[in-house]
Image (cartoon, rainbow over all chains, first blue to last red; front, side):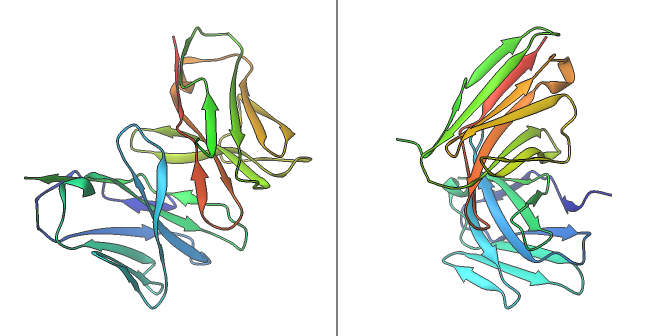
Length: 110
Length: 110
């Protein structure tokens, strides 16, 4: 079983739609959680951290459920520019060693 | 100028050849990492270094070696390349949990 699992997609949605991605992780001792974004043929970049209380950044909302070992990312009012692969990332311990999921691909259509 | 640079950006090499991928950063971070990315598998950690004198194996270090020549430079070597080392290779740096990635090196071993 992979340490961090994601539905690879692709998710094909129209502009303006709301879309949600989920991610599960296997290490219950994991400390920190993130979503990274990766555009085609580019490097990953941090999109947002995920806090236990949930957090929002504009159109993006991230949630963490430690009991179910589950992380989510919600994108409202999708834009064409949101088309990318979204990587769920977990830090298993106090150091900053990251474990990446395989990514979920989003394609927003006009 | 980019904070994290990688050279070469693309390379095609033959089985059995030695190849070195280079990474430089201007962010002043102590921590540096090498990852490889394969379709559907996400990023997997090859080696990491928390200091100039510190080298640590990651998840998939077999067939690779690294050198941390200075705080700003971290090189990855394939001593005898094989076709299943064909992948996209990323270097990253960090000072906290956020990692900053270079643009990647696309390596093909024929």
